Image 1 (cartoon, one colour):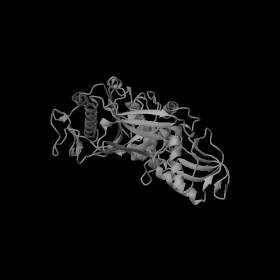
Image 2 (cartoon, one colour):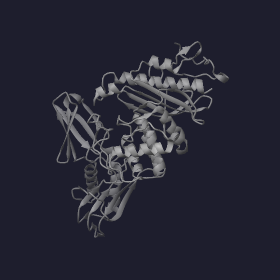
Image 3 (cartoon, helix red, strand yellow):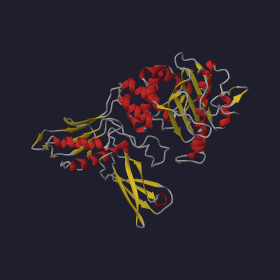
Image 4 (cartoon, one colour):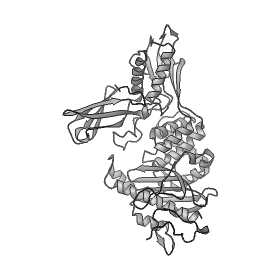
Amino acid sequence: MKALSRRRILGGMAGGASLVAMPRVLRAQGSVASSEALVRAAGLSGDVSFVVADLRSGQILEHRNGAKALPPASALKSITSLYALEMLGSEFRFGTRLIATGPVSRGLIQGDLVLAGGGDPTLSTDDLAAMAAKLAAQGVRGVTGRFLTWSGALPYAREIAEDQPIYAGYNPSISGLMLNFNRVHFEWKREGNGWAVSMDARGRDARPPAYTTKVSVAARAKPVFSYSDRGGIEEWTVASAALGRAGSRWLPVRHPASYAGDVFQTLARAQGVPLPVPREAVALPAGRDLVGDASDPLSPLLHAMMKYSTNLTAEAVGMTASARFGPVGSLPASGKAMTDWLAARTGVQSAHFTDHSGLRADARISARDMVTALRMLGPQRGLRGLMKPFKLRDETGRAVKDQPFAVDAKTGTLNFVSTLAGYMTAPDGTELVFAIFTGDLPRRERAGTELRPPGARSWLNSSKILQSQLLARWAAVYGS
């Protein structure tokens, strides 16, 4: 085993191109090691599947277990992006509205005020603060009727996946009215013999308290968090042994419409517009729009989703896209609609989607079909430009400096599942499309809802190093 040096020229490479600062790649008799040698050296338990193809011709250049359907994890967001772009268009925007069911007379709405969500996953406290200010600027000083919230633009789901820790902020509820990615900000600070704790709907500028959720410190070591729902108030307890002197984290919200309504009531009151306690409307009331808020266009919204891997954004755009086919009854039903769409557009057969973020481990697609989808649909939708540049890792897991070729891809990570799918431009300009799936599903199932089960970190590191080694091999063998 020898590392490729800066001066070493790979055997068989045309034009004398060298790989600069590449991760370690096994060598045998002067040539780049085979992919099987790399897989054996990685020593991963479970399945290793990959396909790499020429982007222009579609010719498969190398594959291993390419037809085996495995969980794509967050790499599924690539398919979701294609789905949303085709069904909604790159300029689509989510909207949130304030609706008056009656006229405004002498500063009072003669009827109800409705905070109506349009499924915007990026709605923030600062957005609601701006809406409250616009409402006051129109001279509104109150209502004669009720203050209602409406969240029926998307079907409600208590959580995205059932096998995640209860306190995972990346696994919140879904509805048509969402705020701060349906998370509440929990903060603590040592005070005397205990801690001062608070819950707020933190924005960049506004930080109103959250009255629909509470937290208290319990004298215990485990569990770190417990949760209960009493009369619509979400109550958390946190183990004292888990708290240091100070810190904060985001916790998921399970009653998003109540949360958003509560926060808006506080923000409106600060603008001189007192409102009654919010109630949730079953159906969208008819009325006149007073104030509106629009999200960013779909393309930059998807770019941020791919960069930060925001699960709620994926579910919102996926379910909204599915609604173009007809009413969406549930998240799994929407996942099936995307499955059917992909089959119709590309002919793939292995796909089985139950969500749009990949957080649910029962989603499946083969590496071969992922490559087919990315090659057939990606270029025309500009998918590569929405992806995050991928940095290679060396044999120690550190980022490679002076990476000699470009990779833009979507990663995916669950316990004992690691995926990577995207595009690469080899040193000579050859463009390739690839998918690498690894997964030890029996170990994942045994881990249950544990956040960091034993062995998961080392397994993940080995998988990510293998991904870099495979990319380095393909750049050397097929990119010169």
